[in-house]
Structure formats: C-alpha cells, structure tokens
Amino acid sequence: MATVLYPGSFDPIHLGHLDVVEQAVELFGHVTVTVMHNHDKTGGLFKIEQRMELVRESAAEAGIAEQVAVSARAGLAIDAARDVAAAFIVKGLRTAADFEIEQQMALTNHSVTGVRTVYLPCRADLGYISSRFVREIARYGGSVTHMVPQCVDRALREQFHDTERSDPTP
Image (cartoon, rainbow, N blue to C red; front, side):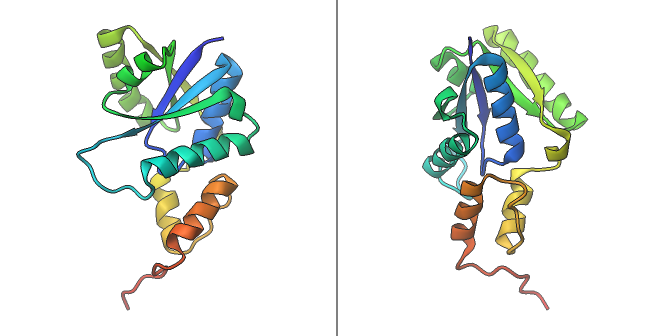
C-alpha cells in the first residue's frame, strides 16, 4: 500500500480531520499527518509539538496509531510529500468552497511536482466542524466533546482553565 501525506495546521485536530485520516488509512494503508507551520507567523493555540502529540493521541484513540506517522514541516506541502516519499497528498473536503480552494492548490502542486491530490469528503455529520470554531467555543467555556477526540477536549480544558470564559462586555 502507498504512503500518503495529509498536511494541515491541525490547531487542534478535530473529528472531521480524524475521519479523513481514518479514510486515508482504509484506502492507502499508511498516512503521514504533517503539521504545517509558517515561521513568519506567530501564534496558534497549541505549539507545534503539542499539535503533533494530539494527532498521535487521536490516532491511538481511533485504533490506527500503527498506520499513522506524524511530522511537522515549514514551507510547502509538496516538499513535505517528497520528504516522506508520499504517493499522494490527501485533503479533506467539507463544502464546495473547500473544493475550489483545494482544487487550485492541487493543480498547482501537480504542475510543479507531479504529485496528485486525492480529496476525501468527511462524513456529513462532521462537515460543520472547524478548528477555528472549536477554539472559540472552548475559549468561552462551551462543550466541544462532540467535535474533538477526548485527548483534544482535555487539552483544550487545560489550555483555558485559567482564562476568562465569558464575554467581559456588559
């Protein structure tokens, strides 16, 4: 079976991401999940190492740890794909808007390297989840247990345990 690369920021990984990882494992046998980062940008909720660990723990919770490698990379996803000898880049799709953005990226990547992109739609019941909304809900004390693996839920609660969870405006 082929190794494929699933790149993303995964800040944090959520059940939609994990569904795409599980599908990729089923189809290809092995997936390298690569936490992409930009050294010029500061921020992000979790540090790169924490994101990588949450991906590993999420794969273990899903029972697919043996089929999932985790790495981190700055720069281009196509360089990360080359580094792990990936046969394909895997991208998850939630909406038609996702397709338009990913299609342009996939065509560009293929023109530069010959590496093809495979799109995997996440399950319909998970298509609404985004890391941005997960972070926002968790920051204000809302429950995200139905959107993230258990290890991510714990990490979010730890991250925000001492922060203000309600809107301070009157």
